[in-house]
Image (tube, rainbow, N blue to C red; front, side, top):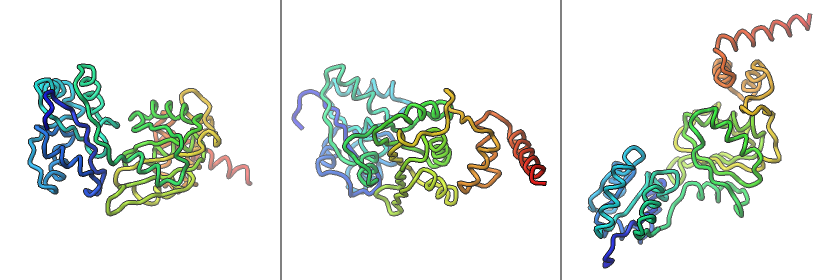
Length: 292
């Protein structure tokens, strides 16, 4: 490298399979003065695989302010820094966007090195039209905020891409079904890895699948036709207009065990599990009386 001023290189790294990396990225990782990585342990495995011994430092969500200033100072002194995310393109759902924006603000050179991206990979394998789409990344972690966002997305005409963690996948699918209706979804897990899997179908069908099989790995959801499958929720807080016992019934029909259905319903309606159980029991008694 012969640049007199520092350069921040945004280097796309594999989302799974280590072969999914460009020759240009490998060259820059070798030649850079420093590699700034979201997860140094994961990046070291990549570097070790390709015999790269460039110094590495951490740059992640929790140290982005202090470490960001340090990296910007190095750039201003003429250092060449390669920025890598946990996986995929830095700046997409990670703090790399903050560093790139500040570097541009300070008139430092920022160079993108394109490559793998989980969202685009999931989109092209979904089988859905890819002419126009909306990338949402991770929705809010709190259920209330997430449901409020889904109310807005329920009006979206374009294909939607969402990232989700395994422990929240079932709740996410439940919320989508209740708020947005039973549109089409392609759920990708462990893309490019040994256990890669793409589950396609209606939201209800995919929810039933993951109620039977525990979600494992990292997930990307691609959704289609939400605006033409209006959900049943109409309140501004995203809580459906049906009653708690009806919600339990719907979840059981989707394949969920009653205990889990009661737990999910209690969280949704802000009730205790005991209260939901009593409502379900009362409805069962009422229906028995009516049939006599």
